[in-house]
Image (cartoon, rainbow, N blue to C red):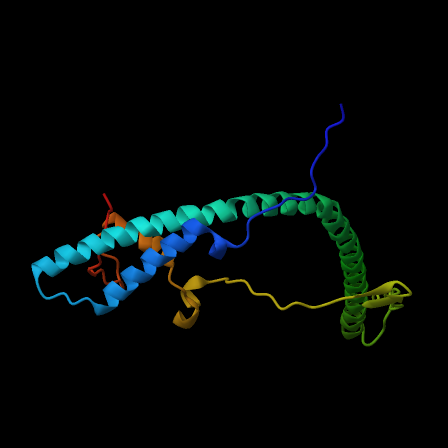
Amino acid sequence: MEEIIATTASIAIRPDLDEKVRLLSGHIKGLLIAAQTRTVKTDQDVVDATKDLSLIAGLGKSLEEKRKEYTAPLNEYLKAINEAFKKLSEPLTEAKRTTDNRILSYRAEIARQRAEAEEINRQKIELARREAALNQGEITVDTTPVPVPEEAVSKVHTDMGTTGIVHNRKYRVVDFALLPDTYKLENSVLLGKVCRAGIPEIAGVEFYFEESLRTTPS
């Protein structure tokens, strides 16, 4: 029996119409009102606030679980679609890369041949000059220049399109020590790791503590 593969899907996209989401929304709005009117002046106030923080954490977890109910199918479909089109586009990308490289290699070879011919002609002239200086102006060296190939075309027009050379400015750091401080960026990911690991001291870095709250619902 031939397998039938579905190419369309029905998915939920209106969480605002979901009764469970509406119920969560009502609780959340109530907690927001309580938070905006709350005063914390005693330890009992902290106890009461902690109860609400626990509710907030619990509702946040429930809301996230509900969100994933809606997004998980979408993400799976999106992943499958992207993978399918990626496979379709890979040969196209490779075809472009291969063709680009062939053209660029051709241009590089023409540039090499031109530079080589120009250098040979320069050396011929230099050798003739040195011979003339040695032999009272007499020259026996063949100074006939070798042909210099024409430059490779930089733009080609066809009835199907145009290909042109673009010169992209690039950079490479050859000596980091000489690089002005303006261009030296901190490694925030690595600094965060060593900070959490408790490394006591790094030159140019100040470690400090900042208070925050962590609520764990029971």
